[in-house]
Length: 251
Ligand code: DGL
Image (cartoon, rainbow, N blue to C red; front, top):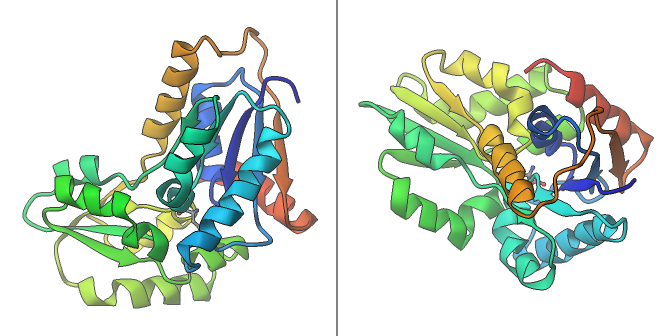
């Protein structure tokens, strides 16, 4: 595919970013690549996450993408800096939306859900230093696996969320940060636990940042027609089917 923007994730989660990127950049071509064979990345050691991220990035670079959007907080935290030092095309990363969520905090707390790797890397500590007052980081244990299995509306999804949120039931939760790109596909289920909380997933900010970078570098597609989208995976055809389903799903 000519002049495409590459978006990648450990699996299907980054489709949540792709959706917003297509909204803001409807004339662009996109290749979405999910490393479904190796998802989840979050519980793995950093060195392994870096190696897997490098291979996934390579799969897109070999196709001549003009920019890369890391549709994954974990890959961004573990690998974005190293990647930027080694490639000449724009690289847009993602990080948990602590800043806007902290502004929405009143007298209660902000729950910041992310993977184990994202929460333990330095980038997150820096964010906490800036916007962490009243923010409680929580590992979204098991949630990536549930979305990878396409079981968003299952009893397993409900039970996993109930276990994660149990310590906070009855507390005033003002905002929830979805700090992993898989989690927006569980948004409705999450909202049901804390109906008054505002949800922040950072997707629009990242997609707009991608647009600004392309504009600044003179890389925007020069066409009026809608662009094309291609889904690719290191996994099987069922992963591609799931990506397409998530691309259309109402969230
Ligand atoms: N979707 C990824 C993120 O945003 C992580 C999923 C994983 O653990 O592989 O952090």
